[in-house]
Structure formats: C-alpha cells, structure tokens
Image 1 (tube, rainbow, N blue to C red):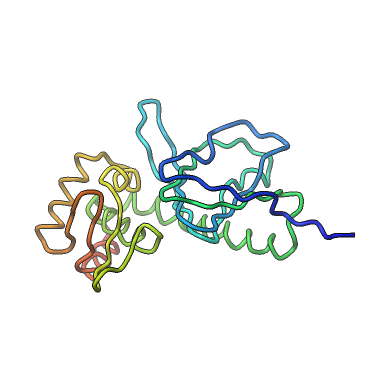
Image 2 (cartoon, helix red, strand yellow; image 1 turned 180 degrees about the horizontal axis):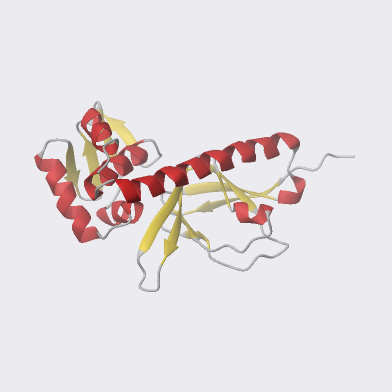
Length: 203
C-alpha cells in the first residue's frame, strides 16, 4: 500500500495576487508552504489600509489556522511571483510536524519582535529594520556589490504600521544621510551597518 503524503497540489500566483482571503474554517482548509518567491500576511482595515504581519519566505508555512480548525482572519498576498505547495494537515508526516512546530516558534518570535518595535522604536528605526528584513527575502538582489531591494513606499509603510506619505519623508531623510538610495519601486542599501545600528536603537 502506497504511503500517504501531505502535499496534494502545487499552485502559482503572480505578484500582487491574493492567495488566501479571510474565511470561516472548514474541513477542506489546507496548510501552505512557500516553495519559491515571497508571500506576505496582511491585515486590512475598513478603509483599506494594510499592515504586514509577517513575510513568508521559501520553506516557510502559512495557513496554520487549518491545524487548529480556526477561521482565517487575514489576507495572504504574493509579494513576488510565488509557487506554493498545498498540504493536507491530516496527512502530515512526523518529520513535517516537527518542521512546522519549529516554524511556528520562529513565527511567534518574529511577532514578539514586531510588537516590541512598534512600542519601543521611532518610525525611522522601524523602517531601517524593515529594509534589512526585506534584504533577506527574494525581493532583494545583489548587483555590482550593492543590495537592491524591490519594494515600494506603500509596502514599507505596510511593514512598519505607517502611511506612505510619512514613510516617503523618512526614506528621503535616510537617502540624504547616505544610508540608502531610493528609486522608483526600489531601495539600494548603501550602508547596512548604519541600518543595523538604527534598527537596534530604542526610544
């Protein structure tokens, strides 16, 4: 008899496409693992303002609500072109269960850090931390020795819990200080050490 496997499908999404919508829990809910690209989990208020709760990199999971029969309360959007594996929670192997547990611990730690930044750091420091986080994802590339992050001011604003106009002002300040260089839909990280120092500063 052939062993059961948890992966039941592989799906592709274009950048900007919604992968999951908020919905009540059902017996058909699936768990997802990013194979390539970058996804982001977002909360959207009644006025359409988005807050990025977590970036999901290759090898990481989302849709964990299916493990506990909980409703999905957030959107999951493809930040780049994304390929995801759809998993049946009832068919997870012991190895996958351990892997998901480790992932959940890491995701919880990220959430703690995000909350701590919101209450203990100025916006400039949070933007520095967000740029460093983006630099460790598939939206970043190294070109001629420079790290180029393909991210808009709206996406930075969603990552730090602010609005585009305020983020644009602080991005301009960081550019004048020579820490970054901002262009259309991209940010070049000129001084990662300075960004790291800013990201670690508290109020």
